[in-house]
Image 1 (tube, helix red, strand yellow):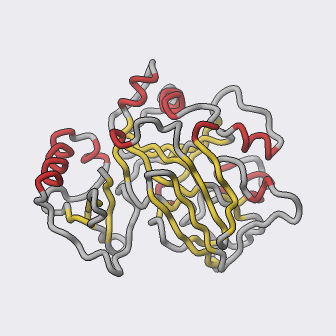
Image 2: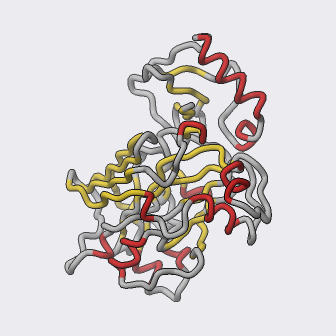
Length: 289
């Protein structure tokens, strides 16, 4: 299933995109798409049955904003330097274990919402990523099978980063990762049954129409199952939590000088096979983030 949330900020309603591309209203079945729903197999089965029976009312998509596909995210765990080609372009050694950092849930916006360039930024960068959405409480997982069983689905994420804040301001990556709007998510949450192999997905990003990243999740150093299993050794994962699994080569930081960092007015588009497409425009933020 392709689950999404549509409507104005703070008033999104749950919806489903059917196989014919028709937007369907889920608000008669569930109050929202969140961890509570993703952990409830009975409610998910009811949605599937209603969709198959044609019982869901259509929504007029014209002019309707798409919000983040998951509400009330508990935490966003991110994996750094998780593609062989990205590690090479940055000159970093291949990590022996996954590099973990965090983004605050309030960085999440919809897939077409404005991205704000923070005050004082000189190195705002792009990163298209495969997001994993958790559907089961997971702690101390032992096998890849257990890890994948904890996954509710997948989505497109844009891990926007301010590199000067991240690298040059005292060694805390979180400083460059947590300005508001720095995690556009969606358009859809695609349930795990529709993604038989998360390591076989094309992943791409354009800036102002120019292709910058063109990779595949097969290049991940630590695949999805290993990432979920590993993270569960250090923190409990709950339904609705999100893991951003890293970005392939092609970020601005990896380009020759002068590096083409993002600026207000730039348009960034990104997509992952089967998971949909984002389009965001950058705007200056005139207050502290």
